[in-house]
Length: 243
Image 1 (cartoon, rainbow, N blue to C red):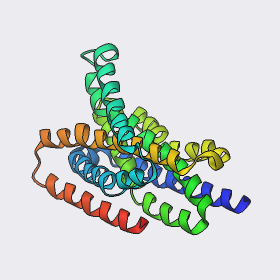
Image 2 (image 1 turned 30 degrees about the horizontal axis):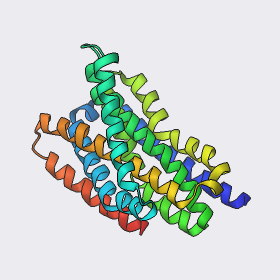
Image 3 (image 1 turned 180 degrees about the vertical axis):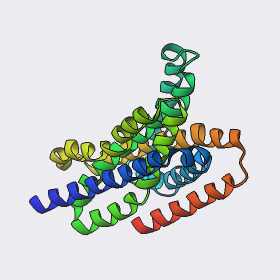
Image 4 (image 1 turned 90 degrees about the vertical axis):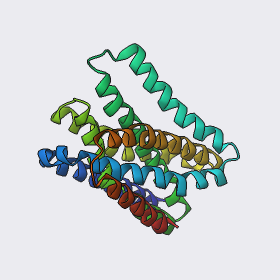
C-alpha cells in the first residue's frame, strides 16, 4: 500500500513540476511568448478539444450511463460562471481579464484537480496501469502551463500574478487532487469517476471552443491553423500512449 501511495504522489508531483517548468519557461521569455501567444492558444485548443472528443468523453460514456448529462453540465457550468462574472462581478475595465483569463483558468484548474484523482484511481488498479495513464497525461502538462500563464497575462493580470495564479490552477491542483482523493479512493467507484471525467470534458470543451479558438480567430495569424493541427496530432499521440 505504501508503494502505491509513493507511486501516486511521484506521478502527481512530476505532473506539477512539468507544468511549473512550462510556466517558468514562458514567463522567462515573456516578450517572445507575447508575440506567439496565438500559436500556443491554437495548439492548446487542438489538444484540449481533441483529447476530450477522442478519449475523455468516450471513456466517461463507458463508465457512467448518465455521462452525457454531466458533459453538458460541465460545459454549462463554465458558461454560466462566465455570464455571472460578466454581469455581476466584472465591470467594463475587468471584462477582458474575466473572459480571457479567469474562465479558462477555472476550467484548466478543475481538469488538473481531476487529473490528481485519476492518478489515485489508476495506480490503485495497478502500478503498471497508473504508469501508462501518467505517461500520457504528463505529455500535455508543459503546454498547459504555458497556455494558462499566457491567458492570464493576456487578460491583464501582470507577469507576477499570472505566474502565481497559473501555478495554483494548473500545477499544484494536481497533487492537491491526489492528496484529497487518495484516502477516499476505495469509495470512488467506476461510475463516479465517469461522471467526474464527463464534467472535466465539458469544462475543457468550453475552454477550447469558447475561449481559445475565438481569440485565435481574432488574431487571424498565418500559421495558427498549423499550430491547431499540431495540437490535434499531439492529442492523437497522447491518446495512443494511454491506450
